[in-house]
Amino acid sequence: MQPFIPRRLEPVAFAFLLSGIQSFLISGIATSIAISDWSKFFELWMGAYVSSWAIAFPGVLVVAPLVRRILKRIVKPDSSAQAA
Image 1 (cartoon, helix red, strand yellow):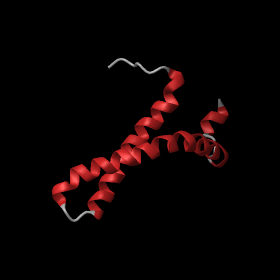
Image 2 (spheres, helix red, strand yellow; image 1 turned 45 degrees about the vertical axis):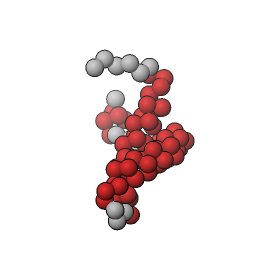
Image 3 (cartoon, helix red, strand yellow; image 1 turned 180 degrees about the vertical axis):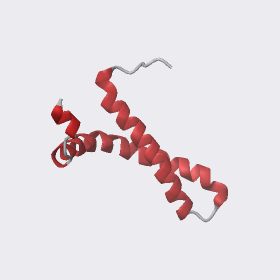
Image 4 (cartoon, rainbow, N blue to C red; image 1 turned 135 degrees about the vertical axis):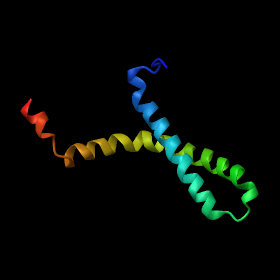
């Protein structure tokens, strides 16, 4: 597959994929814990997935830059990066 997303949209694509995968996994686990009627599992899971992704995607867009700034302050630089 050839790359097709412009570099300037990489943070949005990152947030989209990360939030989608996280929402998929977490909503599936939460749904399986919460239900008693397994015949409706898939339907309930997909409803929970779409709802949670709608919140998670903008959340990651807002939170990711903040987390990157925090990490720049608390993570030591690589010793090899200092020598270069």
